[in-house]
Image (cartoon, rainbow, N blue to C red):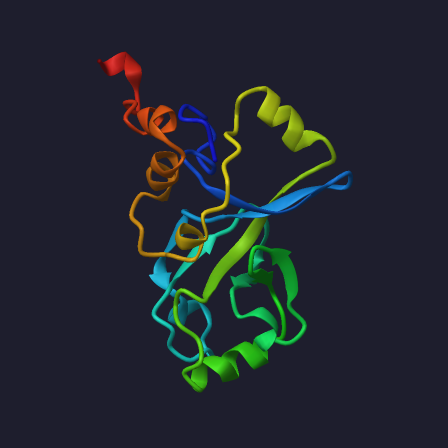
Length: 173
C-alpha cells in the first residue's frame, strides 16, 4: 500500500497485490486504479461479466492480465497462494463465463502491471514509500469498494485506521 503522502500520481493511495518478490525483482497489480469503463468494452469478444478493469501498472500497459480464484478450473493458470491464481487459458475462461460458472468476484482484470528491479522495492519500503499489509481476500477480488486504500487500513487496526483520516494536504489545516 502506498504511504499516505506518496507524490507519484500513478501510485497515490494505491493498493497493490504483490504477485512475486524474489532476487530477480518484484511485480504486482494496482487494485484500485480503475479504468472508466467496464470490461465489456475492453474485451470485445468476452461475454458480459459486469466487472471493472484496473490499470495494474505502467509496465506492458497494452496487455491484459487477470487474477482469479477459480483454482485449476482455468487451464494453465499459476497459483500465487491463498487460493489466488494468475492467468491461464483466456479462451477457457471465456467459455466458463459463457456457461455462467464465473462470478464477478472470481476474477479481476488488469491492463499492465507494476514492476520493480532487484532490491528496488526493498529500498522503497525502507524509504517509507510503502506500507506492507496482509492480503485480505475479501477485498482483493471485490471491485465494488469505493475506497480500497482506506478499507485496507481500517482492517489493519486502529493505528493504521488513523492514517486513513489524514487530510490530503495537511498544509490546508
